[in-house]
Length: 308
Image 1: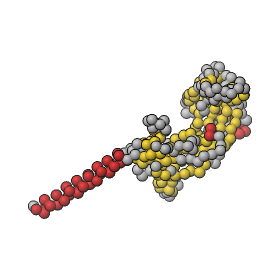
Image 2: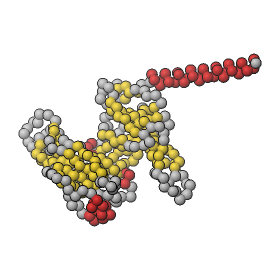
Image 3: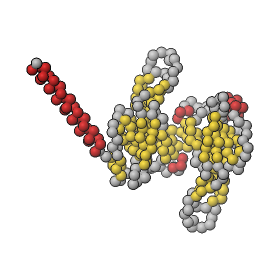
Image 4: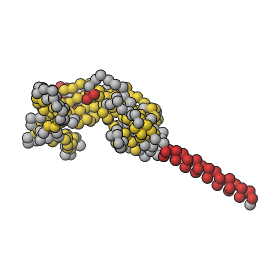
């Protein structure tokens, strides 16, 4: 009986010690804050680690640079395509207006279900959906990830820029051109633009941005075309095309210009930034009188972010 009581007391003591340590750890975590971007203090989030995404100053036009953020970890996987389930939530630091990001995941890894020719496994960085942010070398962008994961980021730049046409050269991609007959041919008061993308070896390292706009004579202010994209499905096919909705209104900043000089410029709307897929034509309807340009973006080397 005494032996049993002693063992029970020792076990109970161990539980209390463990609970005390856990409570102390949680209290320390809750009290911890992270400072970046001068005196800005970012919050502690339970069971999450903040990482610092920091890019170098570049002479390039910042409008032609973006930063891709990924959260994941190295895993041994088979020949299937695997991805981490989860999503980013963007936050704004109160009092500063600085953005930071939180990647929420339950740890589930999804995959395609192809039969692999063998049981060989390869170590790969398996990550969730990506997040693209503006290129800003003056600020650190904190990214929170669950313990056990890491944050990686890559710099993307414009590889080429083109004017879209209503009847592009089908020889660019003859196989994609064959699929055009499945898409709507016309919409009242709209022009249809078609883009054929050349087939590339690694299309995951590329992105396509389509940009509607109008050519206008404007002053020294920044001007932009007001409008939004709507994605529509081709019934029965699973294909998608885009419709840009705009009444042609142009907004601008209100700076005082030193003179009345006007310069002819392409006044762009916010572009649609998406996947590069050479297997299908890219079909975009825009209101008559509006032009369409597109950019091909390319990724540079991936970097691993340090803890904040």
